[in-house]
Each structure stands twice: as C-alpha cells, then as structure tokens.
Amino acid sequence: MAVSTDTRRVAFRTNPWGRAGWLLLAAYVVYAAGRLDFTWDRFVLGLDSGAKFIGRMFPPEILQPESLAKGLMESLEIAILASFIGIVISLPIGLLAARNLMPAWATWPARAIIAAARSFHPVIVAIIFVKAVGFGAMAGIGALTVASVGFIGKLFAEAIEEISLKQVEAVRATGASFMNVILFGVMPQVFGRFIGFATYQLDSNLRNSTMVGIVGAGGIGGTLFSAFQRFDYEFVAAILLCIIAMIMVGEVLATWVRGVFVEKGRVEDE
Image (cartoon, rainbow, N blue to C red; front, side, top):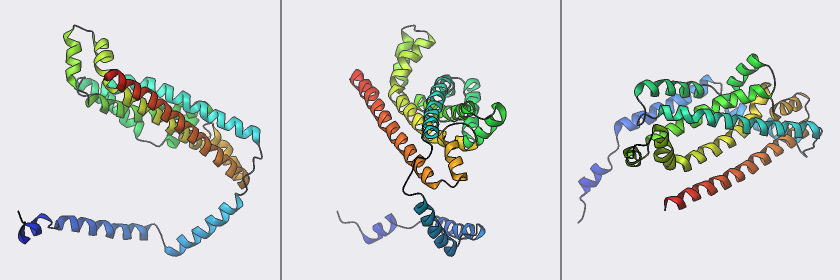
C-alpha cells in the first residue's frame, strides 16, 4: 500500500528540541575552546614540535637493560597481585550489591564502597598510597586493587541482577543453604561473564601499572619517568615499545583464557 506524502512528512519530522540541543552543544564547544585558549596556530605548532620530539626517539636504544627488565617484571607482578586481591574482594561486595538477591540495608553500603572505589583515577589513589606506605610496589598494588574493586564489583553486581531467578528458586526449593544457592543457582549463570571481567581488569591493570609508577608506586613507570628527565628519548622509545609488547602478550593470553572458560561453560550448559 502506498504511503501518502503527509504520512512520510510526519514520520520523518525533525524534533525542534533536538535541533536546539545540537545548537546549544555546538555553541558550548566553541565557547569552551575559546576559554581553554585552543587556537589553530597552537595546534599547528604542536604538530611540528611533536614531530621533532618523535624524531628524537628513533632509533630506539636500550641504555639500561637491567632497569628495563626490573621495571617490566615489577609492573607485571603489581598487575597480577592487584587483580587477584581485587577479584577476591569484589566477589562478596558485588554479591552484596545485587538488588535482586540482597535486602536494601546490604546493597546500599556495598554500592557506596563500589562508588567510592570508582570515584578517583588510579594515579590519584596511587599518590595517596605513596603518602601512606611510601614509595614502591606496595603503593601500586593498593591503588590498582581499589580500581579493581570499583570495576569488577560494579559489573559483577550488574551481571547478577540480570540472571534468571527461576534457576535460583529451583535450587532453593531443594532446601539448599544460602551458599549452595550462590554456588549452584547464581555462579553458573555469571561465571563466563565474570571471567571476561577478570581478564579485562588484568589487562587494564597492566596498563595502569605503568602510570602509577610515574608517581613513585613502582613498576616501569618510574623507569620511564627517569628516562624523560634525563632526555634519553631513545630509551623512552624502547621502554614504550616494551610496554606495547607486554600489553599485546597480555591481550593474547586474556583472549585465550576467555575462550577456554567461556566455551567450556557453553558446552556444559548444552
């Protein structure tokens, strides 16, 4: 059946409030750029300065191999320990934050903890830990543990809230205890997603471990910052390439782990 011109005109009518919103957004972008002294001349000058800086970084050269190896190993250790501790803490907090399983008096404090852990960038938390426990890997582990609790706790709680309660009720009907309900009614439904969350957080902690080191929280970031201060830009390039290689290896391992556990869970479900 043919559609009349009037019907098409109504179907694709532009919302005037939408146009006004886009105009206000464009006006604010122009205003913000002016307030922040963003000019085309500075942008072009920055491109030229950036090209000169990158030119000084090549060819990469490993000037301090022992320092590089120690920093990379320390970053890896910080990321693994922080991820493990963060996951262990996130499990009960995420469970308490699930509103479909827990009462309000339990969910609100758990969600407050998650919100507090997510409120600050890991570098800011690392500065606090450096002031509290001093320079070194312990500060980095503490900072990334807080970040892990904020990320995994939130996603784990949301995953539990999306489960089917029929399986939970079926386990409860057998007279199972609360822990058995969690183990056999809840965890099988969220285990695959939780493995994905955990591997992603490990990958994120590998990246963040290079940043927290800049403020003295251990890892390769300290070596990178020292190389910048000495103007050893060839060594800076070598460090950056090693960090990229470490992240790529971690991504490959994370993809393999997700594939093994997720596929295994699907086969068991079938």
